[in-house]
Image 1 (cartoon, rainbow, N blue to C red):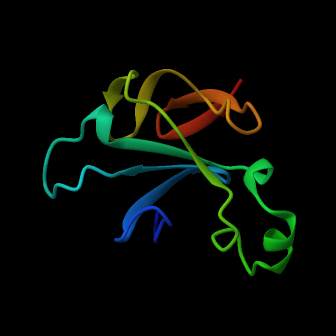
Image 2: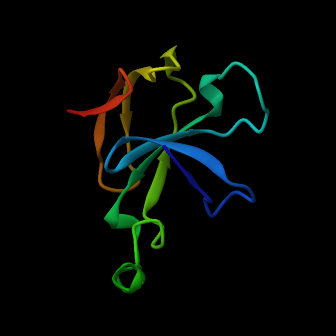
Image 3: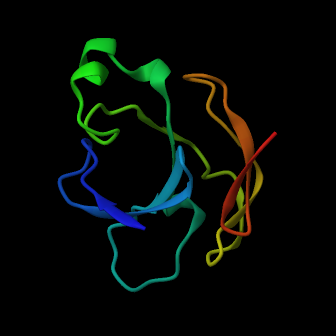
Amino acid sequence: MSVILWGFLSRQIQVDMLSYDVAYSWVCGIEDHDHLIECLWVWHNCDMNVDPVRKENATNTRDYGGWTPTGVAAHDLISVEPLHIEASIYWPSCCGMHGFIRDGKYLAV
């Protein structure tokens, strides 16, 4: 787990890593509540969305902004801890990465 300040938010949020390039965060804006699928953001660190010069000058992956969200609001939230959602997740706007989140892990297909 780590805390990252995403560029589109004005506050820091907790981000949990599912693999080296897939993470999730709960961005409901409400403290101490039951998580809903609509609050879940799933992210993929994709080089296809990165300016090559910006990436070359970055000191770590958080600096170059390759993190891309995918929509999961229509998915079923099976469990919060460990995270499990159905159906599969997909990033059509970048590299087309596709897989499942089960037992708190990202499983590529």
